[in-house]
Every structure is written in C-alpha cells, then in structure tokens.
Image (cartoon, rainbow, N blue to C red; front, side, top):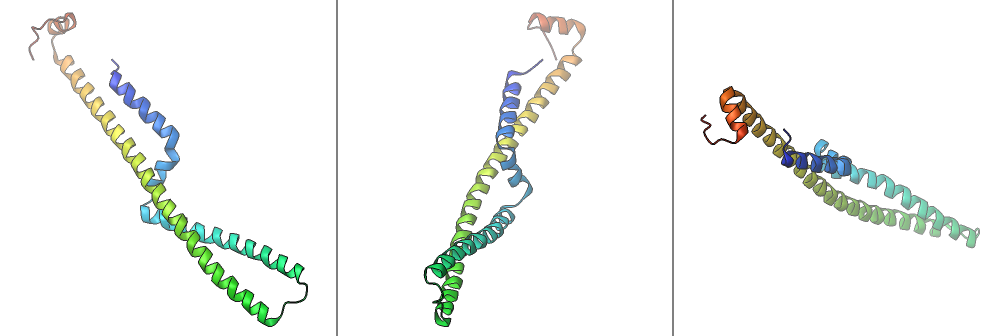
Amino acid sequence: MLSEERVRVMTRLAMEEKSGSAAFRRAENLGRKDYVSFQGAVAFIVGTIIFVFLFALLFLSMFFTSVYSLTDELAKTLLIIFILGYIGFVLVFVITVRKSARKDFQEDERKLQRITAGFDRLHELYKIEEDNTRTLKTLTKKQHRQHEAGSPKIRK
C-alpha cells in the first residue's frame, strides 16, 4: 500500500535533488572554510589574469600613442602604478568573491539541510509503514478479515 504522504515527500526530494544537486553537493563534501578558501584562490588567479590583461592593453595604448617617449622615470612610475593597482584590484576582487562564496555556501547548506530533513521524514514514514505491516501480519486470519471489514472488535 502506498502512502500519499510518502509519495509527496519522495517527489519533493527528487525535484530538489534534480534542481540543486551540484549546489548541495558542495556543502556536503566541503566545509565552509575550505570552500571559501578555494574560491578565494581561484579569484586570485582570475583577478591576476584580468588585471595583467587590462594593464597590458593600457600600456600598449599608451606606448602607441606616445611612441618612443618612454623614459626611465615614466617606466618606474608605470611599474609603481602597476604594483599598487594590482594589489588593490586583486584585494578587492578576492574579498568580493569570498563574500559571494560565503553567501552561496550558506544557501547550499540550507538546501542540504532541507533535503536531509526530507530523507529523515521519509525514513520515519517507512518505519511507520513497517510497524503497521508487522502489526497486521500478527493478527490472526479472523482478526484480519474483521479488520478488512472495518469491524471495531479487533484486539491486539
């Protein structure tokens, strides 16, 4: 016999698993600190690549507009601007990504908790059905017939 509530719980769990399986798997496999640190390391690498690319474009545009007017003093100034800009850009980029990763992880954790609660409820429903089935199996044939007929004379 299928329990309506059990079918609803199973359907909801299947839909949640299908829609967000990758999301709650991150929360299941990694701790928050590890996840945020990993995202920060990736952000550092990506931020470095983005900054170097943008600075190279800026440098090339400056070089071609003022051909051969690059003096030692201008080169030192550009190097200082590059270093300070790089440090500032990467810090802001990494901090932003880490905040976003922290928020994403908390959402993934909430999804995992909902799914875990759903599985706990499903397990509870199975136990209830198993207990009910065991109770019915212990009834004698006569009591079982009375039970099916809806007689209130059943004694346990």
